[in-house]
Image (cartoon, rainbow, N blue to C red; front, side, top):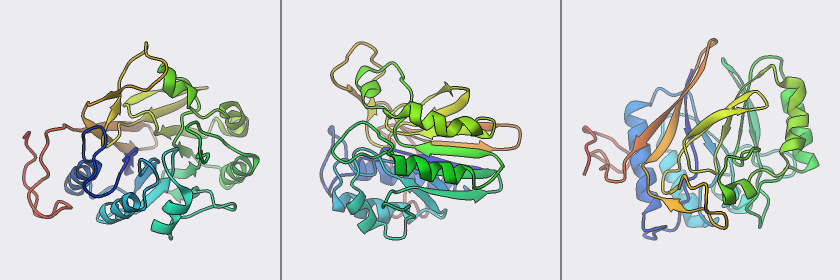
Amino acid sequence: MKFIHLSDLHLVGPGATLHGLDPQDRLRRCVAQIRRFHADAAFLLMTGDLTHGGEPDGYAAARAMLSALPMPLHVTIGNHDSRPAFRAAFPDAPVSEGGFVQEAFDTPAGRFVLLDTHEPGQAEGRLCDQRLAWLDRALHGGSGPVFLALHHPPFRVGLGRMDRIRLLDGEALLEVLRPHLGRLRHLFVGHLHRALAGSWHGIPFSGVRGTNHQIALDFVTQEVAPVSFEAAGYGVVLVSPEAVVAHLEELPLGTKTPAGDAFGNQVETILPA
């Protein structure tokens, strides 16, 4: 089974820029590339921060561009998002009791669980008792393999500011996961704007770059998260009974949108600008 892992779009209003870049144009280019090369993906997994500040125009743009993809969208939100604005723009997106943007769905490869770690007004992630209870029920809903996706990583990665705004309830999350560790095949995270992989309490994890800007690999700076301008990226994940393989596809800053309409129809070869 093949699916796409996308994260950290940070969309703003039409014509606005963020860190000198146009987030809508950057996402448009990624969507065009996904349409051309990965239209056979079973679904797209979105791990939060669709907008930079919960802008309604940003959500409208996200909906327009992502709806042009031929695969279903499964999404949770991040610290830069707004639940009310997201739900207004994506009224059909599944939510749990309490209005949390999270869902569990089954695939031939196993159960996928998307967990909402957004805490309004806070950069760090949180999990209340209601969300932890929902997760416990979702995990007990089957006996096969499980894949977990959330915006905030529950572990430190060595980047000072990002570590302080990780999921602060990592230990509570682990206690819910502990009875199911043998079933957990992979953990997908956003938030970090970096391609990375490793394991947490024996659970393999991976993260992807954002589609606009990245966070510098800076282990010295502590008070801020320095922005870098490395290539945008998204994940192409292949799941088989033997392995979970997460490829990072890169879209260099100078890459042109393929010829054709805004969503990649009638595309040509992608070449550097």
